[in-house]
Image (cartoon, rainbow, N blue to C red):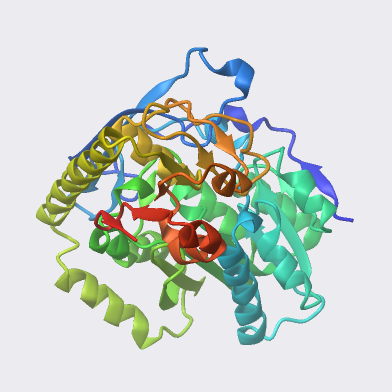
Length: 423
């Protein structure tokens, strides 16, 4: 059984850096291009007895740095308010579980890992990725600030340190476990407000010939798919290769290889080593493509914002028409991205009867702000709503496969992004 560890320092004491400057280059030349309004925290699902109590809301605005071209939030929330108690679990998705186990196998084979090698996963969640590494016989350690998730990983034999990763955590792990042959960060790098402290931790922990593997939503895919719902308070950064590469170089690290991945709705995988390691042609090729797509121009993001407003208009019109015809609408999936969509369109239980989600941690709760009940997926066949709005549209194929019987009985799916369509 895995061991549960904690840092003495309270995670709620960790504060975000000043709002006045860019996270990457500290420039004050950040231009707002998208305003999604005031929204509650996306993963703060309410217990029944808490519905009706005041909920904090925070501005949700995205900006573009004209100096280094990094895209980021303009308003940030202290990390402790979002991550101390977390209700998203990686294992809830079959697609994501398969992907993470595939990543573990790829890294283990590519790096020729041996039993004495240490793999550290930052933002380890319920230990799904590390369980894949454990199959290869290596030592594993997870790092995650969510105290409620660590026991889930521990029960699966994954030793977990409950902490925000940074220089303090990196130093402690190095002293107690030795250097890490591999550090992974899947879907957690966009969450980091203090990138300097984070990368100082990587520098302390990573073995001289070790590798840091980062996977994150890729900004090019977000733009191409008009995936505005990927924007929420947890994601303080929206990464392109160019800004990431320049940031890492300032910390003695180099992107040596890159891959574009289809998981979610498009991700970037970066293989990172200490400066001096050979760099594959894939890196320069992708950065050149980013420039060709004008990802270093503010106008590109202003067009994205215009597309977001079109989705809002079209989806709102469709849902209003369905309700006017006295037909019923439920939703599938309660991911954080779905909360952005609900908030931006001002959708509540008057439009969406319920949301089905496979995660037991969310079932029986209510969505933040909109207060739509979250129920087990079995409820779909019990009530057979006329339409299912796919809030987890990035897993649309998986959801439709799971809900074949619903579709056979006449149910239809609404896919909201990248364009509103009925299946």
